[in-house]
Image (cartoon, rainbow over the protein chains, first blue to last red):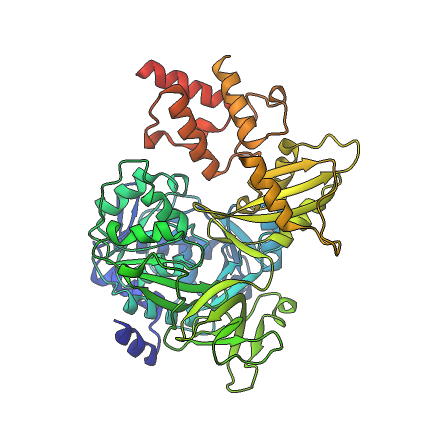
Length: 504
Length: 83
């Protein structure tokens, strides 16, 4: 199939909106979504989208230029939310879709920065047909549609605008690569604001498949997840490691095999080898993949996992997707061609033209270090090792970032937020590898003399300032200074050792 | 110890080790207070099942049943009456 995907990459991208509309005409009764046990057909979803589009138009006030201003969407996952996004895509409006679990003031700040004239919640009342008197759609590859947020943990996440063309090219590649088409069911595990949805929701809808939506409130319910996979003959699964951990937990009756699944995608880092080793048994007919990407560039590298060797060592990141360039760059800015470790730079046909806030970009979006091509490269911040045989594996970050439950989290940012608490004199946050979450954060703190600060009040403070995944799982609030190394730096290794000792 | 005290002790031991049990109110919202996240919730449910010998049906793993110590207590009472 890789050849089909490679050939596809040579052709002009097909428009997402045109493809979706064609699906609604050609297969009106085919299921587009499954939500809470009920199918939503292409006809129904298209009607809801047209209705939402008419509502959007009605709310426009005055001169024509107003309706080009971005819209903020505060949408938890639902068919109505998907219809609203479709409406924005049909209208070629740019829309900011931030993670809904961000603190309120962060959301407000993001909407402000993105210049959102309006912020919409899903009303849930859109139904019924409406006449399509709206202006006709004509593809504009440069038009910005999706604006996603990076999962930067604090302060302000960066806004990543994606052009229609970038989304069209990506959804073409993914559809060809994973053989999506009418009658194929795809599980959507991630929240609607995650970049993973570009594959499991938007690629599926482009190709006429059916998206089986996992309700966020039940996303950690193993029996529910198993039931969805079996009941709807899911063929493609893409999820963060926690999903596979839940499915492979031994302590519940774990006899089910998911024979309908043909493609299983793990998204990179920190899936426990023990869990990975169980995947071929759980999905006996599936091809397994490690798919590497970031919000800024979308998927970049793909590795097909040999099921007989699923348990050995770090997972290779794989080969660049069609049209993708990947470089390893040494600390001094020179390109590393042979084996060794360097920062991964990628350039993809699916990438953003840059963050919405230009000041952020200079350090992250760069030209080819040797000027060998005219492409724009994204510095991923991932340290990658190239082995003798040319394969690439992830070794860490150039900054203090880890993934907690699939969300990239900056330890420094969490430290900065905790450090802003008036009662804390010292703060150090460490990441502890965890089989279920990838990493868990532990905060070691010293409070100022006389303070009555405790975990309860500190957690309350965190809720107001940090997204949920960035709130440390454990806190230790002490009155003694933090351990330091001979050079005066906080001794993180010592903190991890103390923490582990307290747990046992 | 009442169920409420037992649950409070578990929550405090597990998530708030430096907090005196009596300062955690039974109606304190543990989810929006950042004490229990969705992974923490799995841990709490496993403990409740084990400690109170109840079976939590998957349908019942709605966060609202476990938002406060009082809600957990009510949930156990119901589950035991139903059994």
